[in-house]
Image (cartoon, rainbow, N blue to C red; front, side, top):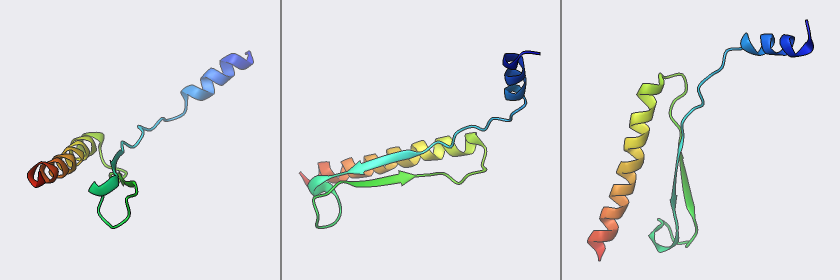
Length: 78
């Protein structure tokens, strides 16, 4: 058996895992909390080991809720 077929056979036996979905939220300038006008980054990472269906929707809702809260504050202040 050639090396190519052995390599394909070995690769087929591995179990692959779904990557963990994550979201990043950036804030910068005067809108960022704190005194420094620096970029603030928030990484949202779901708990590992949960089913993908239980992770993706809450992560998307959390990201959009954070963005909507931020925009609401900015629009009401003006």
